[in-house]
Image 1 (cartoon, helix red, strand yellow):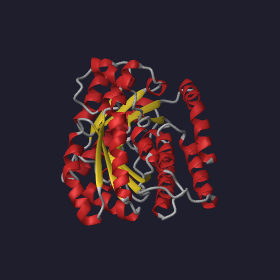
Image 2 (spheres, helix red, strand yellow):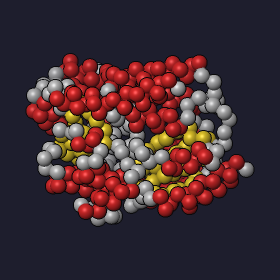
Image 3 (tube, rainbow, N blue to C red):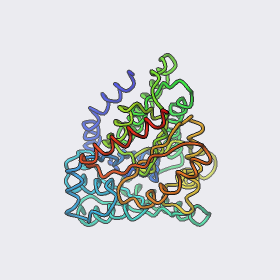
Image 4 (tube, rainbow, N blue to C red):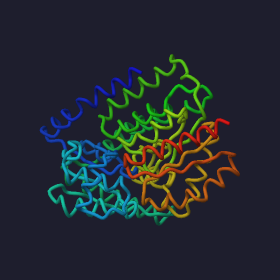
Length: 380
């Protein structure tokens, strides 16, 4: 599609744009792509948010071994590798790194950044693991502190007018992602899984206005496009993290004839299911959408909300099977992967395959065999 080509063209020049913005005095705010950083706050003080969502390079992952032990999630170890090696220019451009602490895997990244790269200031705030009024207030106070820190760092006051404009902008992006994604509920598919993921990942780096224009173009192109060729079983693809560069499992599913119709991941994929209200206290509204209304990740207690949501998605998107993809050492997802298949079978009548990764090329052969066998079984 032309819109995807426009995204590629934009990202090809994005680094130069960011360098120019930085030279002109704008601040670049890097942030951990786990869904709990309200980009609106950066945009409202004329900073440029850049999501840290890259992974999949085993060499970068190995370099993190100089800073932490192996027994942490490879996505977060990869973030350590990219920040400390300074090989990825997106990571070196950041004037400030914002890290919402979601669990110990994320915490080790925050601690490493704070200790080994003190020349890049960082701001951390906690994300509770339960949803109640006390947890909501805790998260709200965290983003209020973030707002004050960003105002001091940039020298720009986040007025209600500026924040409202930023929320409207981000709502447009979320709405378009949601609209495009929901077309995949139809029996005749027009959006390939890899294309939707490319749009979602691109949104972590792209200029917000440009990204919205690209999403509008993509949506408009769908109206005149023919359905994709009929493929194999429709797959709900879910798990802990699906970040930029981690394409192996998706590629194998495509190559083996599976058709990914929905991706639901806690990290590496931008949440887009809900908009931020423009009525009343805007900061409270940000907390409501980013914390309370968001479908919780696997480490929240209780964990039934996410599993309920997955069953709902499987039904709405006409999935014929689920492939559960979590990263090595992400224990909360590994635990859920043991008992969810039974519930999925009882409530949706669907089979599930669990696969695990550490971004290692050595795993490609066994991964391919397991996915191929599973898809062939579902076909029958």
